[in-house]
Amino acid sequence: TSATTDMETLSGLRVMDTVAQMKEIYAGFTIEFVVDPEAGLVFELRSQRGGELLLWGPVESQNDDARVTGIYSPDSCNRDLGE
Image 1: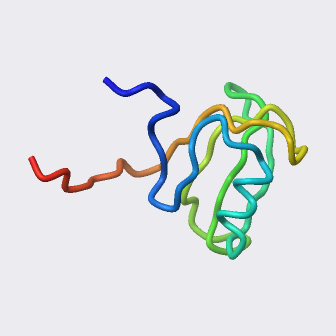
Image 2: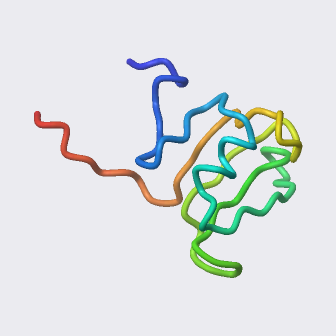
């Protein structure tokens, strides 16, 4: 029921943040840009080069002012919402 831009990662990345913001938030991680056959250009966030995929999502480009247009996790995020 939330707008996509209201959702954020535990570290604070939101859809429509810039690539520069993503790089700042995840400065200690490896971010690679690859072309996915279905999604187009995407970022892949890993703890280290060749490590486990933590997050991924489409981006407008690799430029710092480009926007992150989606954020996905290979594992579903389970969080206690107090319900």
